[in-house]
Image 1: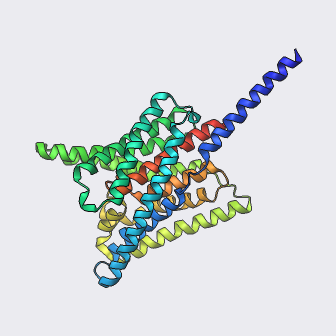
Image 2 (image 1 turned 90 degrees about the vertical axis):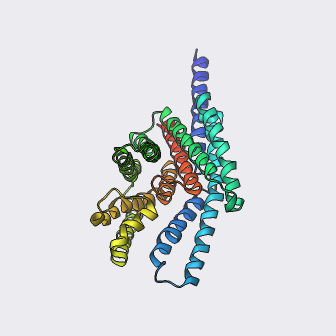
Image 3 (image 1 turned 180 degrees about the vertical axis):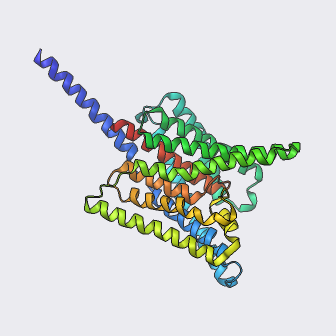
Length: 344
């Protein structure tokens, strides 16, 4: 009798050990993810902020050099993002994820088609990239986002991570719906096209701006520890740097601020005179990213990497490179959701 009880306890312990190993496998940040996030952030700063700021005042040589640096950062982000996304898909499509076969098959079907297409678009000459191919990439990317969010919601994770996935899905679907309504309604000369398109776009933008707050609720900082105090200090510095940068940006460009913010992040919900208020959600995003990166928990670090990629890509991205980074961010969120559900 005692022997039977001991064998059952051993079996339960073995299963728990296997689940812990699988969850740690999904919680770890895939290789080259941080390189992709850093390069994407550099591309944002160089190509979508500095170039737009100095296109009228800086010399041609300086603008050319900045453009070269931005192109290098963008290509580095795409290459490292492809590798990181490959690791994400391999882990989510394997039996270790314990997802249903239909979910694993769907992620594999769309994901492993998306990767080689973007790889070819990256290394082949730009003239070979046709508009039809970009539309195909956009369709594949949003199909992957939908499947990854559903995979992350399959396991009952924490409420904050589930809210992050739902907000990400709303932002993605609303951005696509706004574009489709504009194209179809414009050709049909429908009088409510602009109103409906703006409704979709602004609701998606609101969801996009709430993602940093949802991730922040999932990242708890042990403020009594030295590491937590350092994380709080650096998070405050990051938020302050974003706020100060937006203030300087507004003072420098004046009335051109809405155009520059839209070019950098594709945000246009607020009235033009209140565009400076975008410093609040962007500052929160910077603070949460820094706090998550400095966390000891690999799940929270993975959420921090996802948020860094999401903010760098901008809302409703349309270029293949930014779409790839968005898909990678959602894949990291799905892995974090599954890992968090396993450890509960």
